[in-house]
Structure formats: structure tokens, C-alpha cells
Length: 143
Image 1 (tube, helix red, strand yellow):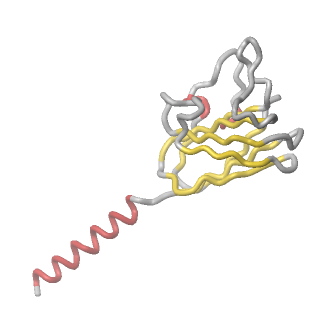
Image 2 (image 1 turned 45 degrees about the vertical axis):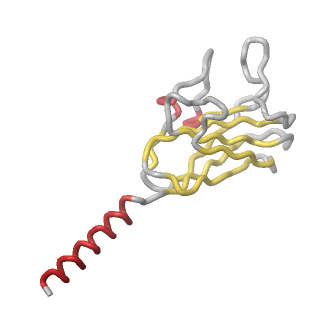
């Protein structure tokens, strides 16, 4: 009986550790300031500073049809940690963030923490935030 109680206690302890160790959260991103409904918004979610904000190197990426002057998307099942978001409005739906001769986007774009880059792409550290509970972040597009 003593061993049976010990085994049951061990199973309950491991179950609690697994439950709390695998806790996940939702991140809702609201994009404000859409001036038109052309094309789609591409949301890129990053958790690695070495990959930010390289298209195709995202943790998660989604393209959402633009409707109205704001749009939202929820990323689900995220672990606790640092994340950053990069968004652009692919107005001509060509799967690229079009840029001018100098490499500056000619389509609307945005980064989390509403970082407005001056001469180069912002860093992950500037754009990142901690996710330790489900949360909502708002971002305004740059034109």
C-alpha cells in the first residue's frame, strides 16, 4: 500500500508539472490605420533575433484580407517568451513588400511597439515584447 501511494503521488506530481510546463498563450495583433482595402496584410511573428524580420524566417506567418480601417489576427498556442511582429500590406498581392531604389518600402508596413525605423530595419530588441499571458497589441501602419 505504501508503494501504491508513492506511485500515485509521483503520477500526480508529474501530471501537474506537465500541465504547468506546457502552458500556452494567445497574442492578438490589431493593425490600425489602413487607408485602403487593396491586397492583404501579411503578419509575421518572430521569436528569434537572428531571423527578424526576414520574410520566410518567421515562427508563424499569415496573410489576411484587408477589410475596413483596422484588422486583427490572433496567434494561438504560443509559449512564454520574447516575440516581435512585422507586418506589411501587400497592396498589389505579389507576395513581396515592394521597395524603392533605396530599399525603402513603398507599401504600408509596421513593427511591434510601433517602432518607426529611420534609415534601417529595426532590431528585434527594439520591437520585441514579453509574452507571459494572453495579450493584445496594437500597431499602426506607416505610409
